[in-house]
Image (cartoon, rainbow, N blue to C red):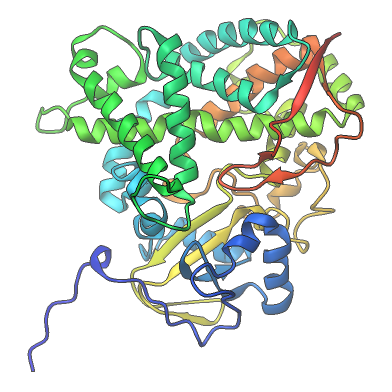
Length: 454
């Protein structure tokens, strides 16, 4: 009997039959999603203690294999078998919002499009960015200090969006444009987490799609102008880049990449910077130690200091994104049947790696729920027990293309903040505060602080 050819992996439905695995799905439809939003550490800790490193769970509308061991993380992220699709992992969650971006491309297609963007993060470009960033940071931090108090999250988001526009997409009339872009990004990320997915006015999902449509139209309208300009920002470089056949890349591809890049350039680093300020405000002695360190640095930092050495301030950055990684969940989907940890995983099965819990696995980290930047010092180097126990930037072919840029942003911003000011909570007894964990971690009230001159 003739049978129809097997469909390509990206056209097949997801497998939802995981009854042979240990675990629990939770409530119909929502599964354990609400529990994950409320307290991801407790949820994944429960699964780890009860079911071990491989189990089944239902989150974000998907029935998944939950992986809670660095060995399994390494296998999936390195993907030497070419069996763990990033595109299909994010398809049900992010496809409407990041279609065409790097996260929605696999293998050869991903490699091609990553190559288009790679030159924007090479040393010559990064040195140029550093000069621009330092000037913006100095002006902005001085403005913050003139105020009685600030909401750190909102101010940091605006700062990083200003930087992203200057470095990635210079536009005229930014004072009018930036607030609209900021609102669109916020709506898009909140919409991506909407449980009720109807593109109908009044729903969070609809607002997210409207934000996505606004952003894509914004970039597409500028492509011809950027292509003809002498601008040296990343967007202009994308517009002038050509294929091997000597043709410009499609306007739509360029716009899709810019939406993804601009989000990665500011939203994730906003979260990391806010959470660093949250912890540092509770550690006055550590702030003083860091201030003494950074004030001894020369005005123009060496390339090694900015991008390679693990100095105490970078230790703060690394510890912050250990406790609160920019992307708390990494999703993939199998292409073929495989075996992980002795458990059969069928083809087309969602695989979930909660980096926020991998970073606190009690068998791998010492006192994992404590904020301790010294664990990343050269003397301790706790994260080097396993190459995949600390994965804030992912790993393998899809490792974050902007990780060095994020590190540079953090270093230049907090050198200015800590070197000249002490960050203090506005309210006594503020710590610990209630945190929002998804899509990015932050205090629910936006972290009200004041800057006190040293």
